[in-house]
Amino acid sequence: MTGEVLNGDWIPVADHAKKLLDGHEGRVGIHGPFWGFTVDAKDPDIREIVKKRLLQGLEVCEAIGGTHMVVHSPYSTWDYNNLDNYETGRANKIELCHLTMQEAVKRAEDIGCELVLENIEDKDPHARIELAESFGSQAVKVSIDTGHAHYAHGSTGAPPVDYFIKAAGNNLRHIHLQDADGYADRHWTLGEGTINWPTVFAELRKLDSDPRLIVELRDVSGLPASIANMEALGLAQ
Image (cartoon, rainbow, N blue to C red):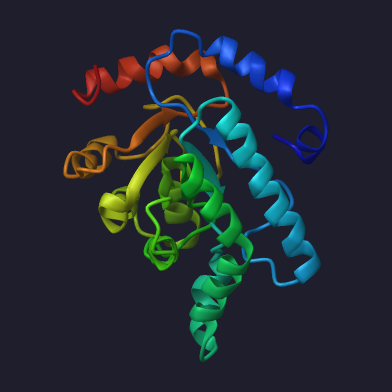
């Protein structure tokens, strides 16, 4: 949801979502607010706005009965090359995230929701896992977007998608499945890009954390083809 929606009357939007989900027996969650900010805000005034947005997102999540909220990772390609350029660069990054997220983490614990940290520009698949574990809370886990990981692999030299899954291990609780070309954030039908899906699902089979698998396409009409393409590879049913 945008800031305009969150600052206005979002109840009708939530009610509409609940109607659409009527009869759905699977797990429910939302993508948390992310436009225009990161969770490692250094400016204290900006940090207060980010805190507000995270708490607003959790309020919406609770209203629709959601049990996960996606939060964007603060790690960038610049961080990969520069965090170790400073004596306490990594620790400072984590501290800023704690200052921003600590109230949201407590709120998530109280309502039985998991905040799942999704890779965006991440080149290092391990940094985000270290951040999630630093909270010492079952309410902070990890998300992987396969297209984001493939973009980072193809364009910034990050490891391939299956390495991101291996790094997350049983901290992985949520996945956005989308195909891409390693150049941009395509959100293509699964099977239409260049992600090596057998290696992705081979790593997923090793996990006990039961991550939510959500097909996230730019054109939702590609959903049946995504399932069919994965079935043809023996990876879905």
